Image (cartoon, rainbow, N blue to C red; front, side):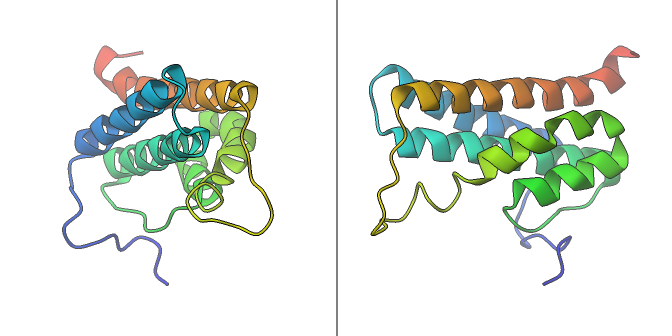
Length: 141
């Protein structure tokens, strides 16, 4: 599979990706704060970072990356800026919530409220970092 192809109708505007990422983070917050399904909230956290990383790479290199693996996407961002090195552990942790949260399994997969709080903070912090990296270019820092 070629990893930089993207789907033909995916937006070529990086800010669309960041806006959708923020929407996923808001969805996770609503679920978390209203005692919604913790698995769905964790999935939205994973989706937030997937879209934010894809938006960052699109912004910096003008190309779409295909796939859902956050570690792959974070490593692609690391090639652009070594500042992403500090987020590799978080990308590996959040990566767990792409498949396990969406499909029923024979082995239980539960996320406690405390675990969800950590997952949410991880996604929130990582999104803020990615958004800040894009914003840096406009602020001159």
